[in-house]
Amino acid sequence: TCSSDLLTYSITFSSNGTVSSTAGTLNNTTKVVSGIPTGTNVTLTTTLNGCSATLVVNSPSCTCGVVNAPLSNGNQTICSGITIPALSATVNANETIDWYSAASGGTLLLQGSAIYTPITAGIYYAEARNTINGCKSNTRTAITLTINPIPTITSTGTQCSADLLTYSITFTSNGTVSSTAGTVNNTTKVVSGIPTGTNVTLSTTLNGCSATLVLNSPA
Picture 1: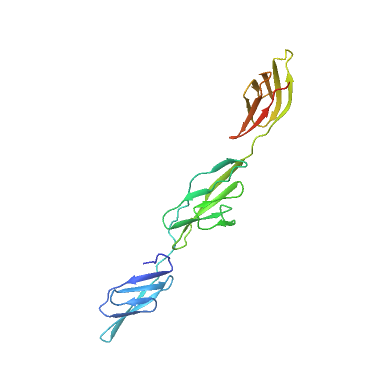
Picture 2: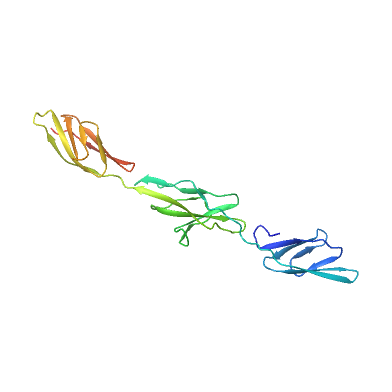
């Protein structure tokens, strides 16, 4: 039987004589040879009334079993300027996660943690590792942090209508703009029909991020 750390193995035996072994620690009461280094074959010798017999036992294959890749708890998307959240994943009992910069090889970013907080946007890779025997998952789980920029909005001018009852605003923005008053045309970049004396707030949205611009009514 292989040990949990895969470094040694043990043998159980039955014999009516006194047994010795070329490796490991032998207990003739429990009939067990323990602590045999993995990869080491042993010869058991039993003696009774001056007669002896031997048994050669080959080392078992104490190799890593399957370690599943971590299960991602989800990608993260935030707006620029927001505190970067931790990325996280889940593994089985007696396992932990090592975080890398690439799907294979790469730089070890953090060892032995279910969470990792990056400092910039990118794809990060979680590898499962058994804490008892050191066996690792054959593949890594990719988890993405996306940081979207805050959209821009700038007023490029205001103009009163001929009857002075309303005014309009021209603007530039890389997002979709709305206004607290008037009619917005996102194609021509104009807010028209704003009652004179009414201040407005323009809001622009892009990829879930937003910004505002407060404009006072012209005189």
